[in-house]
Image (cartoon, rainbow, N blue to C red):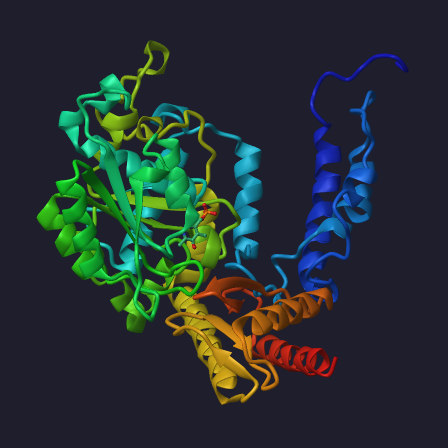
Length: 485
Ligand SMILES: *Cc1c(COP(=O)(O)O)cnc(C)c1O
């Protein structure tokens, strides 16, 4: 027996034993999350140093691997599940979502066509429609799940290009003297994923025109109109406008209604990026954020950000699924099935063939919280955001640098002994580094009109009022220490 190699999977009883152990470990991790430092105290390369350079020659028991999770993985963890993670845009995973994720790995279906995974396919269709109803998008929006908003937006931009059917780009490609240069428009504050999507599709950086924003960081529709006019005169073909609801730096909301009117007049595809903030349209008093979206052609939102679904899961809605299909569908003989005419084979609507059963965790999360549970959590996060903003506004030592339509607060310290923006920028960068180095809070930054701006985001599932209060106390304490240096 000694030298024979087991060629099957792990024995089921062993799986059961370690499965129970792992679930216990995860439960303890979530229970004790606040005991961890939000940011790890390590240097680049520290984790690699603990791993052998050569791949394992002989198999090992899972018990050994689990032990090394504690020893090797944990020291290098930035804890996104931590209630004091208030950087970027949080993505926190709920218990229900984690369980759904485990189950989808166990099934390991590949939903390329309906026949290859009917439940995956149909639960995807239904959960997408549930979510559409939750946020109040009109019925003529059809949806699909991709991994990230970057990929969703790339497919939206591809649809916009395909929509100009006389260009025949699918057939002839972009290197075709007969087609004019294509131009895409987005505000200066649009997410870099829009640029990347355009780059991927051969639009080129010159094909992306940034439209300036007003004092509240919203796209100025008049500037968009002027840019389109000017471009048309110079031989460009405007084909896509991207409006953002909840921009990455400040969560500003572009005036979608006005932008949509311009797009309609000019016959340009309008894509709306609401990756982070779109979920809050579930809250009745926040419905207004989607004003005008009914006139858009496509819309992206990420349940993996502020809806407690484990990363990754992004939703793209489009009014023109047939355009998306005509951009990407290529059906080889071996993938043809007898149901093709009566079902959506999701492989037809994008670049990927293989697809995970992502909708399962989404279904778990929607059912576990219900609309009521989600709305209650969003209301609390929005309330805490306003509360923190009020503390900034009342403090003589800090100033707020942008409106707070959701729960992201942009601010900086303004000690009276400093005058110029350069001095203030240096002070605030040091202040943020000092705060983050405590391990008790994680904040990130942006630049607004040349000002180093600290961002605090409240959208984590485990963040409560006490955490926001403690964050404020810590920020003030670090401020006094930094100031007296
Ligand atoms: C986070 C975010 C993105 C990128 O999302 P990914 O899923 O990481 O690709 C794009 N746009 C906005 C507005 C975002 O907040």
